Amino acid sequence: MIVDSYEQPIERPTDYKKQKKYYSGKQKRHTLKNQIVVMPNGKEIVDIVVGETGATADIKIWRSRREEWNQEQKFQGDKAYVGELLIDTPHKKTPSKDITDAQKKANKQKARKRIVVEHMIRLVKIFRVAAKRFRLKSGNYEPVILVVCGLIRWRIGAIVICQ
Image (cartoon, rainbow, N blue to C red; front, side, top):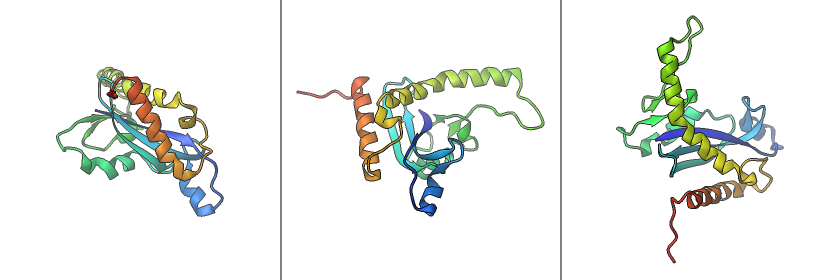
């Protein structure tokens, strides 16, 4: 399975302590973070974590939910998940030395496998309510994103509604 996260901008909270935890230094704005786990064929959203604060690291979101998964299950992720034993991540260069040509080739192969989760995130972001700044009440965020994911699953044929 393949795991990745994406961020969605929100309105800036008025309370100082609250706005501090929603600020994403990477995006330079206040965001909510969602994490998606998909099958390698790209035809099924297996799991989604919705509405984590923007300052939360991707690996921290993963570690809060990894107990729900079988310990033999292997995952693939990007460089945000380096250090997690269950997730196969690309090689990173160190400050003192570059990566070898063989490692670059391996990184390309891993990226080709991981691209399906990026395509799934794109499908979610086609719905503007899941891509642009979220302007509804914050309590409605999780149901809205889950409905969007349900519509995506229905669109790609993962859900069959019997009549």
